[in-house]
Length: 264
Length: 248
Image (cartoon, rainbow over all chains, first blue to last red):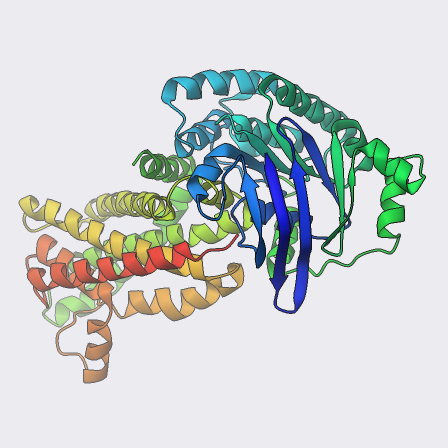
């Protein structure tokens, strides 16, 4: 369903993604793990047509996203690391815009919006402005929105960042459910190893832009001779702390978060 | 087409929901209208140029449309840093449609703001000379809105963050306003100033509105329309180009 071969992305002299190859089968939940700045988000950006790779090839549901950009976009949904909802609009309106942008027919749009908002426990509050929602509700809405156009693949870039354990737990339950009922392939990144262990069928570990391990969580634990995925992760990537160089956009984002009390 | 419509609708919904902002944005034009309109009125009268309130009202309306459309384009910056833009840019829709939807939305909002200020002007005592010409003034409002929404989108697509905002405000938006003849007649200016005003697209917008609402124009309505249409097309193409280059 997803195939990446020899993906490379360089920014000037810095190589963010260095010869990464992997495959994700249809219906699989694949977790992409790695320390800050390891190249997770860059990889997602390339797969989702937001960045052009320096070299390498990709395939999404049999399509080359570089050649058939819009067809490929129609087939995946993405939940970004940062919120991408319009806070001034209601939950239903955010869904509506997404449905129109993804060419979902009106009738299907209504049915799926209702079904998804009910599943993600947001139906009762569909006519409220999103800026009044809690962090967990916003995340749920974004994921529900990502499923609206019945994508074949859903990309989740650190979807549980900043959520409490209850919300995280609930979120994964929903994602697993849709993965099973609609056979959607899920590609996710996270910093929480226990989540990856619980949710993912297979994981890939990336460090310094290179894929250092991939396989089922069990296989990776056995390979490294560790008890938990967290230990395996630390063994694979070392325990030094990474300093991600913050671009001005990141700084601004942080600033905005600070001043909006985390509402955005 | 439906993508353009839904993004246009989004701009309108956001506008109608921010009531406080609507009221606040009427503050500045009212200040210009009341303080300058009545403050400079006696001097203007003595100089034999008639009522200053009559003269300045089309300028204040033009100013409102200018600010409103530029800011809606710059709203792109906000959308870009904090979210919604990404959602539209990874959608399976050509970028041009997204740009057009946004620009039309911003321009529509700017025209509504212009109409609101027109109403305020009328309440303050402004009277169009010929009522049948008011729709022509509306056309000029739309042209001003098109020109500056496109410019706003072009700038919004080019800046990385809000840091450049003040720069744009001081070195672009304010000069456009002050050089446009919104506040003073364009006749008999020193050469350098006359040159600068004739290079300012807003001059033609406000001149066009004066020709419609007051029946006298400096450049003439035909030239005004021609200049505005050409500038609008050029800026729309430029804005679309800049917008297509945005990286997320």
